[in-house]
Image (cartoon, rainbow, N blue to C red):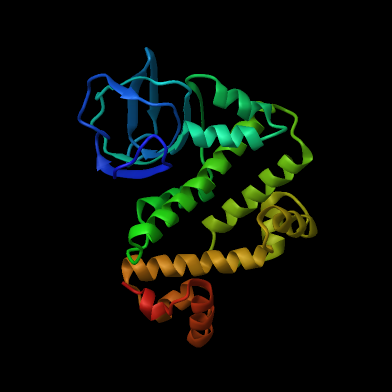
Length: 285
């Protein structure tokens, strides 16, 4: 994939021990780098500062999100000291994009501090939602090509970026969090639980118990933060899962309907076409 210092870059690497065979110093321009590492390790040096990110092996993976701000042009060198296959998504946002972000961002000094310091970095264990978004980048629907595929990949990347920035802000806030951030983190836990349990009977009482809040609180805050009611989100996610299975595995439409929680194929087809603009048969690989 060709890109320039003005582009938002979204890429993925799977089952290769290194992202490049070049182990010599190379130029790196100013940018924000975000890596979702499912497994394997990365070892590199930028301007004399050494970084090592380890997400474990295929048998014992320990996924990690690593964020790094390169505030000024520098020198980068990869160190190839691991043979474990990498499974990762890489996102890079150029300096002009970050400058626009900082011009419009108020009330979050942790973000401004992070994006103004050279080689500031932050890592955290991702929830299921970020991992699912990264998997969509790793394995986009086969029907997407050209500009539509580019838009799809960037949409997932931007979602990962804002989720990661929120993780940074709440971490730097320490023991205190603004009420809106607290409710957002709670709703993110709800969303991660839903994404990881789409095959289960997801009642609002069960979801609320997992989140440690009342059903009314969950329903109110979830819609405030994500723009849709909880059960609309569940239906959308199940339809997305059905579409992905149709596109990548070529499962029968009846099986896709069951995966999406529909007992009636006609109702499933109507909902599917309304959401994606094509029928399940047209989406099938």
